[in-house]
Length: 122
Image (cartoon, rainbow, N blue to C red):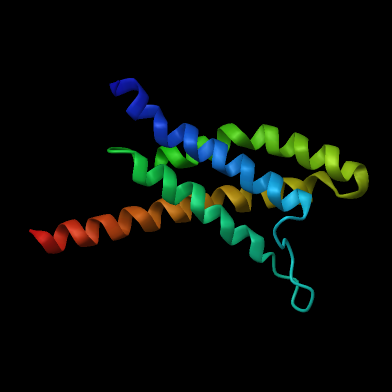
């Protein structure tokens, strides 16, 4: 049971990371806004970090990032299969690293809110 709790946040972060990535590739969510070029869909990658951080009792920042890194090869393969050689490998790697960054930001934000509320209670 303890082993399950240790890996619950990592596995859920990896699965949610893959689901969000697949939903962006399928066009279910908006990946890029037409008028300013920002990839606002990357903000959805905050969710795997938040969920992974909420399910863990320790290593609330590292394990959600580890889950995102575990899901990254699958997502890169999915990216390559959907777009082929029309998009460069550097763009794919930059997009994947920024998605992992936003996942880490979600975990860090959840950890920060937890520390703030636990610190105020004492």
